[in-house]
Every structure is written in C-alpha cells, then in structure tokens.
Image 1 (cartoon, rainbow, N blue to C red):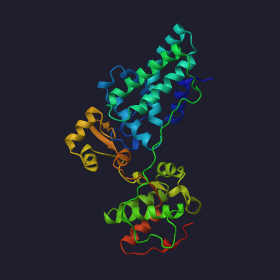
Image 2 (image 1 turned 30 degrees about the vertical axis):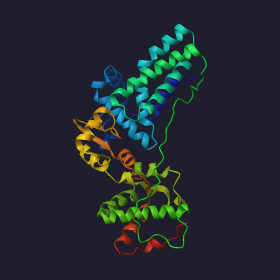
Image 3 (image 1 turned 60 degrees about the vertical axis):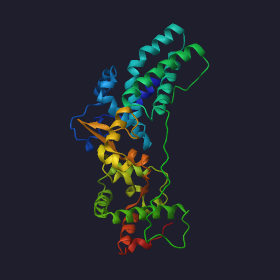
Image 4 (image 1 turned 135 degrees about the vertical axis):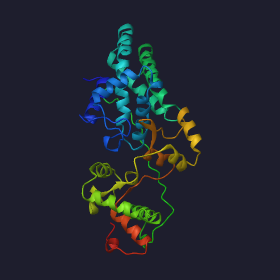
Length: 338
C-alpha cells in the first residue's frame, strides 16, 4: 500500500498530467512568459531552490498560487508544494524510523499532516518565502513526536487535508427592475435568477455589458470549457435541470485573472506604498505572484478579501438584468424560474 509521500506524488501526477506547469499565472494561457517546464522538471527546480527559498522567486510564486487556488476550493498547488517538499523530508523520515524503531509509513503520514496543518496556519501575516521552511520544520517535529510519544495515529490513505472557504452570501445592493414579484426570494430558483439579474444591472450601470455579452457568446459556443466545467460542478445550480449547467460561470471568470499592485491597492482602499510594504512582510491579504519582474495579484482571492461575492450566474439572467436596467425588454425574461 502506498504511504503518504507516495499518495501525494501520485495525486500531483494525476492532476498535472503531461501539461506544462505555470507558476506565474496558474495556466499557460494567461501567462506573459511562454516557456514552462513539465511537472518533473519543475519539481526538480523547486527542490533545488528549497535550499534558500528567501532568494527564490519560484517558491514565492508557488505559495501565492497555492493561496489563490485554496480560495476557490482547488488543492492543486497546495499539493504541488507538498510534493516538492517531500524529497527533503524523505531522509528525515528514514532516519527517525531507523533510529527510533517506528514504522516509516506512520512517520510519513504524520509529516504530511503536520506540513499541511502548517500551511493552513501560515495563511495570514507570514511572508511567502518563510512558508516552506515552516512546513518542513513542522513535518520534522511531527516525525519525532510520533517516535517519542507513540500516542497519535493518522491515516496513510488520504493525506490531503482541505480547507474550503465559503463564498460570501452578500449580494450587491443594486436591484434590477426585473426582480420577480409575487415570488419567494428564499426559493433557490428565484435567488439564482435575482443574483444574475443584479449582476447584469451592475454591468449595465458601469458600461461593461457589451464585454459581458461577448464573453457569453464564447461560453455558448463552447469556447471556454474550463470556465463552464468549473461552474457546472458547483452544488448551487438551482435551475440546471431547466437551463443546463454548461453556460453557468463564476463572475471572477469574467474579470482579468490578474491585476497590478496599484489596482489591487485601490480595490482594498490602501495606499500603493502600504501595499508594497505589506507584500514584503507577508501581511498583504492575497499574496501576489511574479511574472518576470512584475508582481500580479490574482483577482479571485482579491475579491474574497475585498468582500466582493464571487457567485455563479447564468448568461440569460445577466442579460435580462442589463436589459431591464437600460429600459429594454427581453422576450425570455418571463420564462418559468422553477
């Protein structure tokens, strides 16, 4: 049976496959840098740079991506980080097992659990370059605790420990003229429709509805499979039985995936100089990633910390809300909602 280290490695291989890894933006499509390594090459480079992560921009970006993916419920980069730590932890696990006569599988299981717990505990006010060393020290400490106490048992089959962040329930204050009358807003079908219409009215107000309409055309034509696939897996699709899940999307998918520090500081309501100081000391709410020499802040985590709800909407509802906000009418507005 595979031990915890092997489970992590197998999981990362399954998730990453043969595709090139992009540590700057999370995917090669959104990255300004065009050369990206395979998972094996990337793992070797990360393991080598672990010797001095403070000087390594690689680990800084890895941690930033891990935090960003955590917020959307995706553990991919968290487990990539764990996998890149395991080569340096194998020797310690072997030494503890041999010298203190404990099962190496149990030791490795405790090390993975401790490292992932340290990852969660360092989510705030810890500079990204310090996170890998904190995780490593926590894992080594757990190995010796296993050997000396022999009082704690953990599973080796499922080493992943996930923390899911709930989406903010707050809706924008702007209300579209198409809010349904004589309907219960607590009905999931109605709430879903209102959500999309409010968002559409907001886009209309700020003059962004044309860009949203073009985005919707891409969704309907199948041009954004990754976006619609992610939304389709969400449990909050109340009317998927009527509309089909293929066109739903998170509103963060409409926005640019990354923005600069200056723009992020404006969203958070802090001076740009303060934002850079927070990045240096690890207190910036959503750690930025590096693209070449520039820093980019991922938009979904920024929305989370700015209390901007990243909800799921359907293009029909968004366009209905925009149409009503502009004083127009759409024939499909009166379709049944449930």
